Amino acid sequence: MISQLLTFQAGKMGIILTRRYLLYIVMTITCGLAIYVFILTESGHNHEQSKLASSKCCIGPITGIRWEDYKRDCGFASYVREPQRAVAKFDRLYQNMGVSWDGYIIRVSLNEEDAINFAYHSSSIMIKMEPEDQEGGHGADLGLSLSERVLTEYKDIIDNLHRGDHIRFNATILSMGDT
Image (spheres, rainbow, N blue to C red):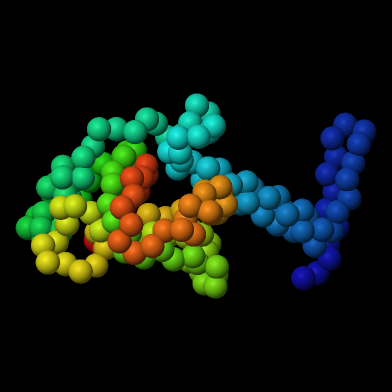
């Protein structure tokens, strides 16, 4: 890159920069804004019943949506029958809604070793619901994705979760899953 001089003048004050320094300044500002936006989205999905419950970071209150309703409208059988209708119902009725459900632990994964997964969530918990989404299915019905902040706050509780444990959880529905 050829170092050309760029001058900016505002009144009696002027700045002389090379193109290289201007590029460094723009890249630094862009990185700062990207980190700021990442932090904002990190705190955007939060339904904990703690000191943060009254703060403005929460999306909204826990709704009365039941697992049975979600399964009927957007579950595996519904999606196989009419995929477009299931996706439309999900977008209209369930996306970004807070729920309070209970289920059984299938697996708890701490994504400390996997840098790619760690960028999206620090931990994931696979849950088997009752009634199960797919009759006779042996896998999880849904997955909970925990942020680094939530993992840090509840680390002792999460460390003591084992396969088959019954838990009640609050969550925000973000996506349908394997669609």
